[in-house]
Length: 285
Image (cartoon, rainbow, N blue to C red; front, side):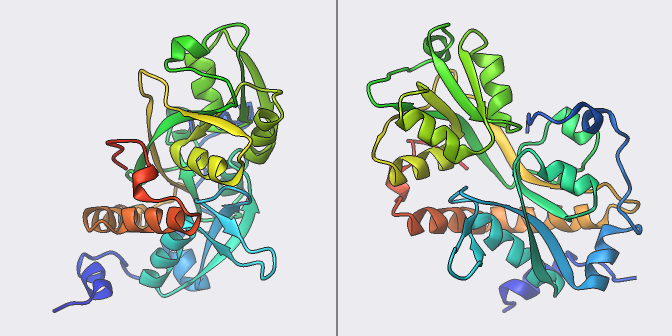
């Protein structure tokens, strides 16, 4: 019987060696750059390094151990498995949701995990298939209640979001009449809601569950209807041969089909004390 690594190899994953996030206007209109030095796959295999973006205070996606400087979280679990299949090491670069696409364009990284593919992003970076799915959500301050986007789409409702994230785009589309407050990071959004400066902050389900677990001063978890489902995957550079994208597509199909992606996500949630039963009913990711 083949072990898991052999099975992935049998699918021909390795090849041979030889959001809507808001982007700056220049990034939105620039021509898609070719990977510096040619093929992304060739560069990774030659350097023996897979360069990935990491983002602080974004559990369960990313978590930094302040004592050791080591990163964990389910995006790192995925990155390490991808690197293992290629027989290379993971190299991390600290970034933000808003800057990771720019880091790809500048050839600072090979992959940026946890992004929502959008048409504008696809003008400048490439996307393999969905790694998992999510639902746009919010966490309110104590005493604030909302069930629908109509409840949120009111001039007296203050909604905050991290600038450059897909949450910003979604809030502006589905609650255009609300007051919009942008912060550089998600932790600033959490503090704004906990202090009552905002009524709710926009987040993914996973980030919302993590925030409520870590901060008892937050109120209700809100999944407004109609539900806005989002696709999450990793962005990569465009290159001349597409073999790295083909490898990732096969890797995703293999690991989603086997349930491994779900296991990585649940394990990272479990590290925070969040059990499968804490997830919204019928959430399929």
